[in-house]
Image 1: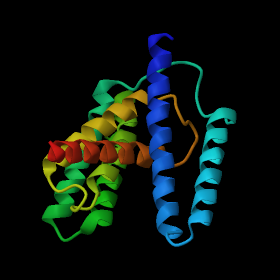
Image 2: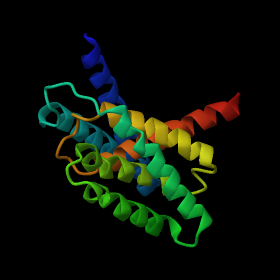
Image 3: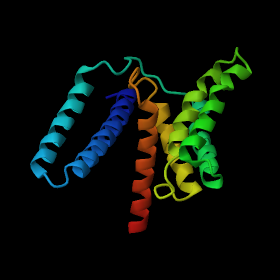
Length: 189
C-alpha cells in the first residue's frame, strides 16, 4: 500500500470506529433492559454502516489533504468558543453560534482571497470541539489537544465523505473522543 492509501485507510477506519462506537452506546442506553433487541439493533446498525462505506461513493479518487495553514483554525475556533462558553453566560450553543457567524464573514473581508474562503469550515469544526461540556472538556488544555487532533483529522479527511452531512461534527467528535481516551489512559498510569 502506498502512503496515501494507508493514510486514507487509517482516517476512514478511525471515523468508522467512532461512528459505530457512538451508535452502540446510544443503542445500549436505549435498550438497557432488553438485551436481544440491543444486540439485534447493534448488529443491524453495524452492517448498515459497513455496507454504506462499501457501496456509497463517499470519496474522491484523488488524494488530497487540507493545508496546515487552514487546519490550524480548528483549534483556534475551539479555543475561542470554549473561552466564550466558560467565561460568559452565553452557554455552549450561543457561544458556538456567535463564533460560527463571525467566521462566516471572513470571506467578505477580502473577496479575492481564496484562503479566507476556506476558513469558515475549519473554524466551525473547532466550534463543535469548543462547545463540549466542561464535564467532558474540563480545561483549556483538553480543548487545545482535542482541537489539534480534530485539525489533524480535518486535514486528512479533505476528500473523504464529500456531500455527506455531519462531517465537521464527526471530525470534532473524533478529536474529543481521542483526547478523552488519552486523558483516561494518563489517569490510569
